[in-house]
Image 1 (cartoon, one colour):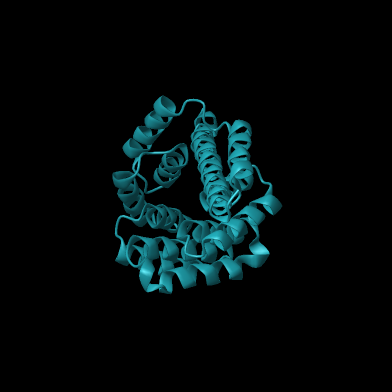
Image 2 (image 1 turned 30 degrees about the vertical axis):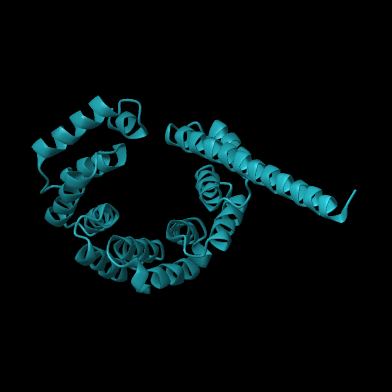
Length: 249
């Protein structure tokens, strides 16, 4: 066999190997993506065990999948498995340092699930808020997160400052509106808490928690009894099996 033919055969072999390798990567990525989407769907419907199976299967096929790491971290956090939750948040951020959603989720995790490390969470939120690439709604979310951290360390004054800053950037930020409704209620400011909750409901569908907050707000001596009954009726009709509805009964 001539050297030229040997070279041609070698080139063909390498080309076929490269094609097979590319096809394998595409196959694994497609399977990972399919399992990721299924996992998200199961999470949203509250089927956490099946969701975990699908999301971990996604990572089995593609461990360099930051969105899957972020999703499984949220799932582990939901079921109070905090060590693996932190591991997967860190993996998501390591794979994609500009993955703002994972960074914000991790900051919230530190503030709410690891109170002793709240300062780490606040620092991360501040970096996100200060980054010019995160102007607008993302910065507002970061300030709302800072408000949550301040509330966790029992600093209502600083919390209100951060939350109002969030609303200056995005007046319809639902996280800030809801937190300000809760914060105002804790300070016995009925009119203010009512206004914030109504603004929240104008932007987001009611939840059992938001309706219960409305009931509690309007149960104050200077509350609106008619509005309280409306919240109670919505809670019983839309969320009859919720803990809040059972508490109402």
